[in-house]
Length: 330
Length: 309
Image 1 (cartoon, rainbow over the protein chains, first blue to last red):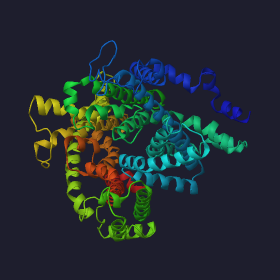
Image 2: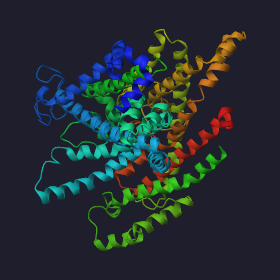
Image 3: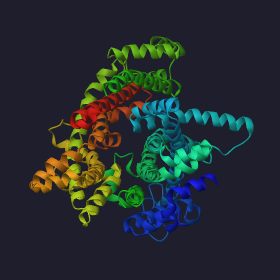
């Protein structure tokens, strides 16, 4: 009741004309007029759906080898041909996409949203001690050369986590953490954290610093609205636009880094496919990339086309969202 | 402003100390045994123990770390675990120089194309040329190194035979061209996006209208009033780029067989050569921190408004 009052007194004139239309519906309406942004959104949705429904769409098992049909070109049995071990490239592509889908969504939820947004709001809203600690920790993580830190984390933490989980599985009888690939995803997520949280945190902090002394925040505080409620209902909705734009650009970067990690053998582990592993296997970790490109281009081009489309689409969508959500440019 | 700078200067060594602790702890509790790396699979326990004592690996982690930092302060990063009897500085020195040259060449490509293209796109806002520039550079940005590198090798080295396939011969050698393009081209989009946004910001300013109203030629308005002001925000990203000059580029160096820092950092992570890894991370972190500090100083020189605050 209290904050409804503040909201209506603040924007009584304009609120009536846009009644019932949230920021989301407004933004979607504007986005539908951006052709390229819509195409990018559709491409992203299609790629993510392909990854999520990989078990339904695949035609073979992802680790099923057929040594009688290796390095074959595309035909009706293998839509995108087969690799060195006769595995179906189309099936592996779908499961590789699923890996990327899981990693990007998990990183978005844990690193960017939970850590980045909450720490950013705490630093910006409470300032003082919290701000100093959070910003300093942020400076330390960002002082590392990022890809190096990620590789270092993945290389050193992985065996330790594996040992821990193995002990846990042995002593409790729970199984499946390792075989399901859960550990792999956990380690990748952990390694990607420094990449994902700091940018979001800094952005959110800056935005919150700008609006924390706004009249409507002060009004809410004066009416006795609790701090968590102010943060969630009054602060967050007002910083959501730049946040969405940054996240859209960030998703492309996370996808790219996951693929690079897998390329170096530090991401998900075989037999589970990943786009990075497919590229690494096709090119012998890069050393024979040129001969693969001239002799079996489909093996290299299929995963690379997906990687390229995905990163490209996230960036185009980010650009479109900037135009759609930025009050200065609309 | 001065107080802020002094605070930044005092914080820098603290920051580097914490960075070194993190890398050291990761290295110590990470997998792999440097003694095993050095002696191979079949070694006698006595020899291993002797080597362990000799390398100081039996001391507490804190002592090992303190010894390391004390050495690093004097420019001595210790001895490599893998390349026996060679100091880390001796191994990294030449590679640092190689990576710096390669990345400088790449940066020149990014800069020379990115800034003018961003400016051009902003000036053509409303026509197809603006989204055309933005989208085509973004398309190049999204292309992974895995495809740019083999494609360039295939076309320019194998089919056209204009440049050698791989190797390294210094800044003025033809072999620098392909890797520099591979590293430099994706970054163009970043500069285009920034320069375009800041040019659009400046274009809307009153002083641009004033300049035109004074009857200045379009050339003078473009370069003296628009481009120079639009360039200020670009400085921020220059800091990151310059710091990146020294950390090397992992995949590109791998694919073109360049003996740079990216290559050695990857090798040493997999070989558990922690003195080398720690040194690389520390050098990279120092570069980043110092570059950001320099950029802050540069800001005050370029933009008098900041100096007055």
